[in-house]
Image: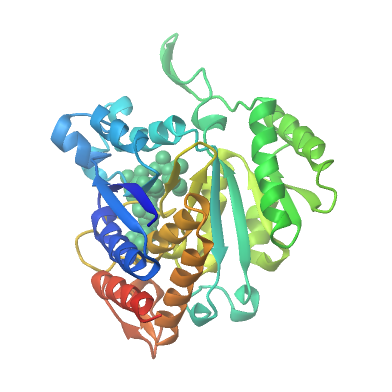
Length: 359
Ligand code: NAD
Ligand code: IPM
Ligand code: MN
C-alpha cells in the first residue's frame, strides 16, 4: 500500500476550519484509493507566535522537512499585525516557501460551469475560463536586497528591491512552457519591461527559453494591460507566467473569474517537498463562523496528489466530487446565488467527502 506523510499546518483565521474539511477529503481518498496517509500537525503563523513566540518554530521546520508534502490553511490576522516585521505570521510563509525551494507557484483559475452565476462578471465573459497562473515564488521584490526601513537625513526611507537572476527566470519559464504543452500551448509572460530593468531581463530570458518550446505560442504583456485584459476577455489566456508580486495580485483577480477567492487552489513546487495551499488568506472577517468556502483548500489536496504523489486520478476524483456537489446546488455563502442551497463550511466538507466515498 502506498503511504504518504503529510505535514498539516492549519494556521490562523479560517485556516483551521478549511483545513479540517480538506482532511475529511483526504480521509475519503485514503479509503477509496487505498493509500495510507499519515498527518503530522504543526504550528505556523499567529498560532505559532501565540504558543512559542515565533511564527516558524524549529519543530515545524523539522516536521515539514520529514514529510512528503505540506498542506497549509492560511496565516495572519489583525491580532499580529503590529508585531515587529521579522516575527509577523507572513514571514513564516515566505520562509517556508524558501526552505522548500518552492519557486513555482501554480494557481489554476478554472470556472465550474455550475458557478457561472457566482461570478460578478457576465456569464458570456467567464464561461469556459481556464487559466493557469505560474507565479515565481521565491525571488523578486519579496526577497531582493537591500530591503528595510532606514534613516536618511531627517526622514526615513523604505526600500525593497526587485531583483531577478537569469537562472531564476529560466527555471520558472521552463515550468510555464512545460505546463502550457499539456494545455492549450500558449504562454503570456507578464512584465513591466517598459519601466523596470529586472523585467527587461525577465523578457529576454523568457524569449531565450522559448526557443526550446517553439510549439508553444509566446506573447508578452505589460502588467497593467494584463490586469485589464483578465477582466475584459479572460478566455484569451491559457498560461500566465509572471513575477512574484504580479502573480500575487493577478491571481486574486483571476479568482473572481471563477466566482470567489475561496475557489482557487495552489501548488508550490520546484523542491523535493511540495507545498499546497489555497491562494486566499486567513479571512479574519469571517473566521470562526463556519461560513468560509473550503473548496480552494480541498482542490489544493487534489493538486498534491498530482504533483507530489503522481496520482492524478485522485485530483480528477476530487474535482468530480466538487462538481457533483455544486451540480446538486450546494453553495457556501461566497458563491451563493438565488435558487441554490446555502451550506456551512462543515457541510460542504462532508458533502464532498461523501461524494468521493460514493464513487
Ligand atoms: P483574504 O484572502 O484573507 O480575504 C479577502 C476577502 O476574501 C475577505 O473578504 C474574505 O472574507 C474573503 N475570503 C477569503 N477566503 C475565503 C473563503 N475561503 N471563503 C469565503 N470568503 C473568503 O485577504 P486579506 O483580508 O487581505 O488578508 C487577511 C490576512 O490573511 C492578512 O493577515 C494577510 O496577510 C493574510 N494572508 C495570508 C495568505 C496565506 O496564508 N497564504 C494569503 C493572503 C493573505
Ligand atoms: C499569497 C499571500 C502571501 C503572498 C502573503 C501572505 C505573504 O498573499 O499567498 O498570495 O503575498 O505571497
Ligand atoms: Mn496573495
